[in-house]
Structures are given as C-alpha cells and as structure tokens.
Image 1 (cartoon, rainbow, N blue to C red):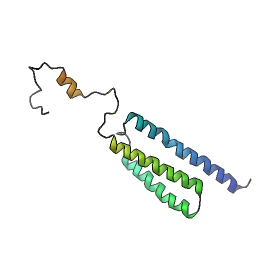
Image 2 (image 1 turned 90 degrees about the vertical axis):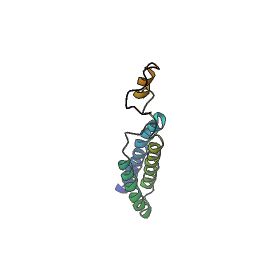
Image 3 (image 1 turned 90 degrees about the horizontal axis):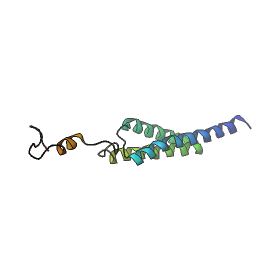
Image 4 (image 1 turned 60 degrees about the vertical axis):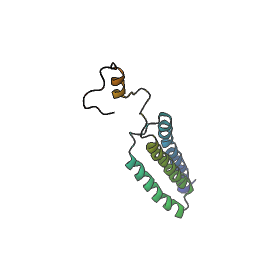
Length: 118
C-alpha cells in the first residue's frame, strides 16, 4: 500500500463522516418541524463552498469527495427548504400561544385588554 492508496481510503472515510454528520440534523428538523435556530447564512455558505469544491473534484476526477460534496449540497438544501416551510410552525408541541391562553382564561364579559387588536 502506498500513500495514494491510503489517501483514497481516508477520503472515503471523510466522505462517510461528511455525509452522516448532516443526516441527524435533517432528521431532527423534519420530525420536529422546527428549523428556526438554524442559520440560513451558514447553510448558504456551506452550499457555496461545496459547489466550488465540487467543480474542483469533477475536474480532478476525485469521485469519493465529489459524492460528499453532492450529499452536503443536497442535505443543506433540504434544511433550507424545511426552514422556509416550517417557519410558521411552533417550535415544539409543548409551546402554547400565551396570548390565546390568556384570552381563553377570561370570562366573556371581560373582553380583551384595552388597546389589544385581534
């Protein structure tokens, strides 16, 4: 085994780590339908960086790294999509709308506070 074979094996390990490092975040965002804490700017920078690196890997025919770049672009893109899709949904099932719960606790004769607009 020479240094180039070792480098190929290490790149495959790095590809697997890169791919699987984002899967838990995508899964959590999908199941909780909460993506408000994710930074869109960071995800766009990751997509841009991996797109540039993808071009380099295509030119140099570095297929394992190319696969990693494509997977990162796909997973980060799905996170941006979910962040936009779930932006109007509550973060978790345990959160409640405090204004609505306050109004529902009032008797019908009290009405909303002065200056409150529904």
